[in-house]
Structure formats: structure tokens, C-alpha cells
Amino acid sequence: MTSTDMVVRESTNVTMVCRATGYPEPYVMWRREDGQEFNCNGDTVNVVDGENLTISKVSRLHMGAYLCIASNGVPPSISKRVVLMVQFPPMLSIPNQLEAAYIGQDVTLECHTEAYPSSINYWTTDRGDMIISGNKYITSLSDDSYTRKMKLTIRRVSSRDFSSYRCVAKNSLGETDGLIRLDEIPAPSTTSTTDNYVPTYPQKKKGKHKNRWRDSSAENRVIGDYEVEEWKDVDYESTQSSRSPSIRGALFIILGGLTIAS
Image 1 (tube, rainbow, N blue to C red):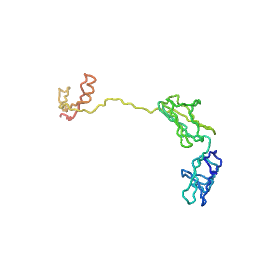
Image 2: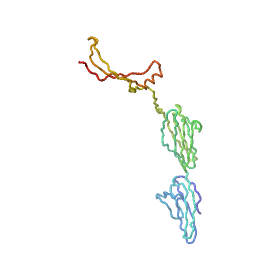
Image 3: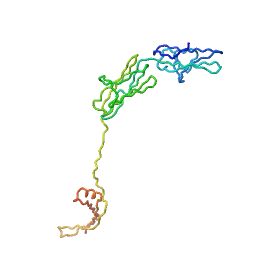
Image 4: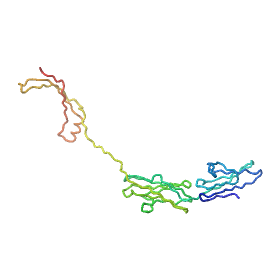
């Protein structure tokens, strides 16, 4: 009798049977529907010849659809599809057991689980209270065959959120859980800039004239000539005049062409 879909416990032995008749006598083989290789009694194979496909110590990796294909050279070939499901208790892994966030940040915690039958998955606080999705917490779950990714997003983290969180997976065969710790880190520093006036070099020349040094203690005798250039900082004057009407501008005096009288 040809096998139908099967559900077996992990680590047991399983045999799938495919009966075919015809003339000439048909050739029968087994392969996975997805074309992937699989472990059959210690050997990695693509195809198994014969009516019986026996797998010792079946594992969750054997889960999937198998095709029994019969042919005898007279078209068409015929096939039978058998789905193999493997039961096992939940297993859990945590990518990061220690997470960190600063106050006001959103942070996401993540757990990965495997189970068949499908597990019930949820999050709890360190006190054992179940976390319900809402404004503060967002829980999500994504499935891929017998694996699941469960995520918990904590919005606008506050000081009381720095604690431990537990992810839980359970089915009819067992239960498992894992712990993730959320710690505080300093918030990114913000730098502020202040608009300070930085003096610039003189912008506008006002004039130039010559002058003389005289010795007042020696009957006003001339002791040297020098040259004076006057400049005005236009930017400074416009800035300061808007603050106080009494400030008119700034004069810069440069000495040059100094000669000593003989």
C-alpha cells in the first residue's frame, strides 16, 4: 500500500512506501520535491531507488514533500506526493542576549524559535507579566516552515524599561524560554553653536597723511617723520551701530615710512 502524508516524532525511524504496477515492470525512485539533497542513513543523496524510502533517526531537516516516481518506458511516468512532518519540542536561540539603548530611543529585541507543531510565542517582563502589543510595546512574529522570528519593540525607552525580558515558546511537546537584558547607554551628545563676532581686517581705507615727531623737551625739535594710514572696518561698524547709536566705527592706525631726523 502506498504511503500517505506522515507525521512522526524526531529521532524515530520512518519508512515511506510506493507501490507501482505495469508492464514492463516499472522502475520506482524517491526524491525530494524541492530537489534538495537529504541524509539517508548516513549518506547524502538526491535519489533513492526502490519502492521503500527508509530514514533512520529522522530529524526536522527531513521535513518536506517527497515524490515517488514510477516509469517503465511507456509514457507517461506517474508520481505520488508524500508530505513528511517531524514533531519536536521548541528550541530557542537569541542573536543578542545583551541590548543597549538610551532614554527616548526605540529598541527591538529578537528571539528565534523552532518547533513542530507550531509553538505559542510570547514575551514577559522580568516579573513574569505577559507583554501585550500596544502603544508602548509592539510584538511581531514571522514564520518560515517550522522556524519563527519573534520581535519586541520598546518605544520611547524610559529609565524603568532597563530590565530583563523573556521570550517564551511552547507546544504540546515542551516549552523553552530565553532572557534578554536591556541596559542604558548615554544619549548622543549635541553641540550648540553661538554667534560670536570675530573681528576682521580693515575693509575700507579712509585716508593717509604724514606727520612729525617733535621733542617737547628740546624746544620742539623735529626728531623724525612718520606716515599714518586710517582704515575703517565696515562690517564691525554696521554691526555695532545697530546695537548702540553711540558707536560709530573703529579706526585702525598703521605706522609706516619712519625716518629719523639728523
